[in-house]
Structures are given as structure tokens and as C-alpha cells.
Image (spheres, rainbow, N blue to C red):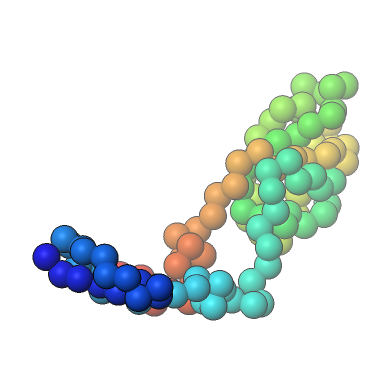
Length: 111
């Protein structure tokens, strides 16, 4: 059994040594140029660029059978006109689809 000392100088018995891994602040590794990921529920109109990769849904277009249609859009891709009516329609981000590379950006090389 080892003995460690606290800042108050009293001895504390430790049965298992610590992992020996230096703690680091992960915010030091955050890319300052990275764009903030939009939340689900973000809305764009047709002919505007999608701010995030994910599944987008036509919403608030009850007058058309295309209401509720889903489409996968990448970041920067232009949201299309309604597929059935050809009108400008609102799109809402329903599911984010982050990439594996984005999850590991700046944290080393992927295998």
C-alpha cells in the first residue's frame, strides 16, 4: 500500500496507483476556425445553402403532398425546390450526420 500526501500535508493511504495519464484541457485542441454545428430544428428555405450535413425535411407546406419529404443535404448544398410542386419550401434539419473525420479533427491521424 502506498502513501500519498494531500495539499494539507496529511497522509492518505492509496491501494491502487493512479493511471499515470496527464490530464489535458480538450478545448486546447479545438480548431478555432471550425464552424459551430447547427442544432436540429435549424431551418432554411429552398435555394438557400444548408449549414450542416444531415437529413432535411420539408415542413409547413401542408397544401402539398410533398410536406414531410426527407432529403439528405451536405453542408453548403442548395436546398431544392419542392419536388412535387416546384415551389420554394421551408426545410428543417431533422437529423445531423457528422463525419468521422470531423470527430477526430486535430486529434491525430485516423487509421
